[in-house]
Image (cartoon, rainbow, N blue to C red; front, side, top):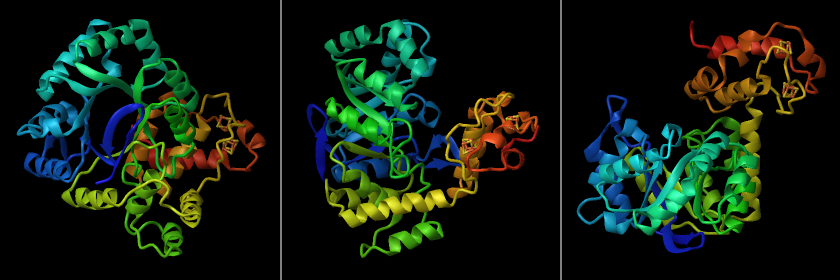
Length: 382
Ligand code: SF4
Ligand code: SF4
């Protein structure tokens, strides 16, 4: 195992961390963790040098924390840095801070956490935490030894990330979604560098974009790109090695759901390092990113010239969801985003076909036709 710096702390963390959000389950039910299999996977990882375990209140329908508490018996707790997260969306008043922390320590059956994260910081949660005085509370709890460091995981735009990173001086770490596709998404590469410059450790989640860039074989144009290299790397190896190549990345969390994933990731982490990719490798990664983009059927550049639509239709977001479905063959995830993330009044069926958007779209996209197609493919039956 290779070890890396963790921001300004004197920790030496394993290049690979174990994320307890996609453990193997029984009957396809995320609340039923396949405990013998998951225990063997996590303990093998720790026995092979992984020293960071990440969980959260809500993972596996709240079964992840108690399960991790069990796995870390028999001396395993002492071998790892343990992180869990306060469920920000459930925090309504100040007393909730203690309520969740106490319950989580109990679920994990530990007397302290190494790092406690505010889960899913976005503009709304950030405002709520500030209003409720989370930092005064956190500093008291750190002084009492209930957790040693404070961090956050993030899901919003870069401008919000900047506000959060610069809005408190004692963050130990930030956890961001980052992979070779999403370099300009959410915090992105700019956020990675900002946080690292300010001494925060950066923990990467979704290194394989929820498995979308791990598929073997990858789509044809992507496979053709990798074939140009002398390196015989799997798609997973390309994705992880690209992350580990960057000194600002402290640790890559992988939500491994089968023993084979653990074994492959351990082998890769053992050989990982900073600045190991050549200039040619970096060019290939850019080409692979473009190859995925070329699979998108709607040539929308997200320029937003078509906004605001007089009927409130979220045109670029709808096209982004559909393009992702086609490019990554990820229809389930896209359907979920279309039906649950995009507000009902902003979906494609609210288009009145006024034509204002088509008149200004620099890509000359047949927006009205595409909106109808997307709605037909992604909308849940009424
Ligand atoms: S054609 Fe539809 S999507 Fe375009 S501006 Fe008019 S209502 Fe909005
Ligand atoms: S104007 Fe065209 S390219 Fe720009 S966001 Fe709207 S649909 Fe996409």
